[in-house]
Image (cartoon, rainbow, N blue to C red; front, side):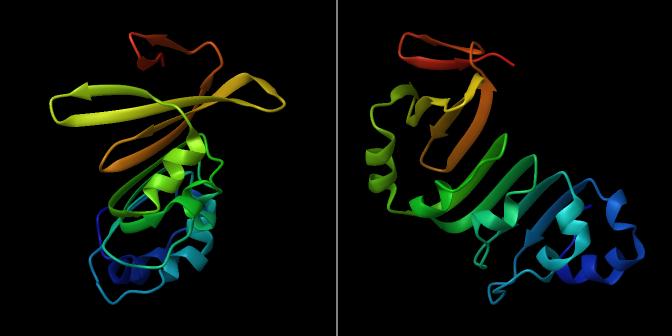
Length: 164
């Protein structure tokens, strides 16, 4: 369903909060500071969400209960990204605050380039979890966090290859 938050709020109360599995929001109100929908049970019970917006105040904590998240924001900071713990989380952005700080914290990366498009990748073991590793990919437009099986990726010619 594609609609503004106001349009969604007109009909959402008539749906059982447990019946909503996925939300796809496009917020184009530049003056919007907080999304009302994040306080509703429908938001809290959904499994995955996609949010496209220019400027509004959402934190990583607003997304922690989702199994899959895709967010396009104007600005995001390294501190907000490092708090995430989901299976798969993608943040699209226009402006990344403290990108150098994030890259410094992550350490050496594998790099893949296709034309002018460059992608950096990292893989980290998860303490107490021998079955999965956290893979992080960063480009000039998005950051992806994805948990993969510990033996589900290989490093080939300095490229991170993920097998689904």
